[in-house]
Image (tube, rainbow, N blue to C red):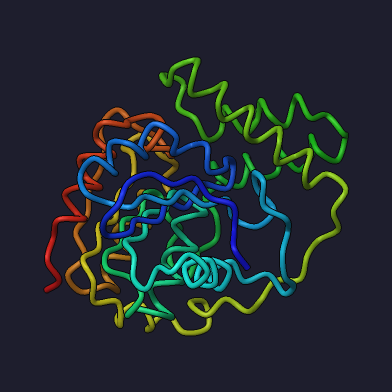
Length: 257
């Protein structure tokens, strides 16, 4: 498998993995600045998002990313993921630590993933209810209000709405797909094998589940650094682009312990 991608620059590779309410377009303004720092930057569409076909069953996106690295001749890369993309990046690093030079996760879920907070559960349930009623407009409203902080710009809200609408259109007629066993749910101790520089971050206005996950993941990953981003919610690359790039470049420059 080779997932669709956008690319910029030459040098050490950096893979960008998008949130579950987005696609690779969420990274558009970051490709050239990261490339200018001396990197080959690749933003992927994960299977079933953007231009990517749904792919294999059972679903194991971490293996799809690894196969894409192989197809693109990427022996080792820094992985940067937001939310769902962060969860995938974490599993690539845990299962194939020799393939990951550094790891930067924004608002990734904890391992093992705890029961959702009332706030998070309310967003999920409201979206499911709207989709069951075939009310795409209401579902989009729920997603935007639930995942994008009120202070975010109209442009950010519209970009998320555009990407999530495309996701709904792509997934609307699909049956539930079989999921592969989650290797980290089965063995959270795999996290301790990740020896590359790790930065775990969340926005100070993010849902509490993801702010808590920063500390929960750090406790299982020796040497991981953490950050809480001011003026930011769940989608740091879109809501706080300059701080996102500062943190990304800082982590890319770190030497392994």
